[in-house]
Length: 267
Image 1 (tube, helix red, strand yellow):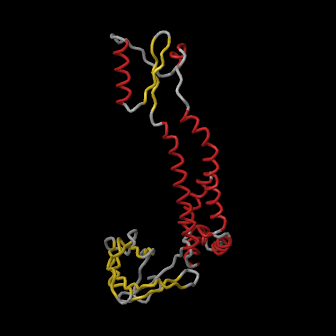
Image 2 (cartoon, one colour):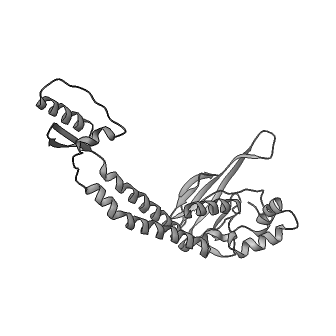
Image 3 (cartoon, helix red, strand yellow):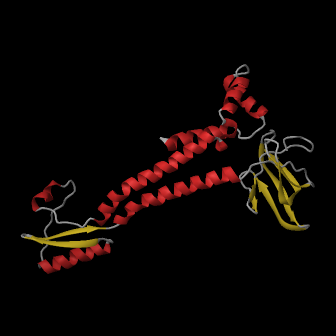
């Protein structure tokens, strides 16, 4: 239930642009709620934290509850799983053979020792660890493998908790911002949507930009920026970025989100 709720909210967080200028989401709400209700819908959404959802107290609380739920469930189930994994195998009562849903009966001619060797060899070749039990009418074999695979759920739970912890650390100690760089321009400043300013400790220069469109339309097919990282007066790295192919340097990841003509605000 918690995972479904977090997933649903995350989808909502991709529809509502996070930390965006109010006009962008107001335009979105106009399409959904109409011209009259859009401003009110935006104000309510902003007051509930949907404009910066991933940093809101209630979203972080949901992540914490999910992590706590995984930890409690894992601890609660551990004794039972340990009993199942470590439980010694015991022979099945003779009258119980015919009551299993999967069973097969066949005849093999040979000595009891030949049969024993063939059965044990076949089980070992399949990766099983066979157990032999003698009873009045013959010999009974039990075999099992991969019993420790029951612990795999703890690997999955731990992975989810690590992902959640990484998300919280990123939210609390990381930041998101934007840079508007014209061709030939160099800057080291990143601006947040809330008006804050951060200095990278190195500079970024936009050497060139190109965009391709679908046919004769104004719909962009792809657009690329060629960038140079400059640190201490030296050109450290030259590379290109495009949508869904970012550049990373010293813990910062740069995504290309939009473009515009020189002097436009949406570049």
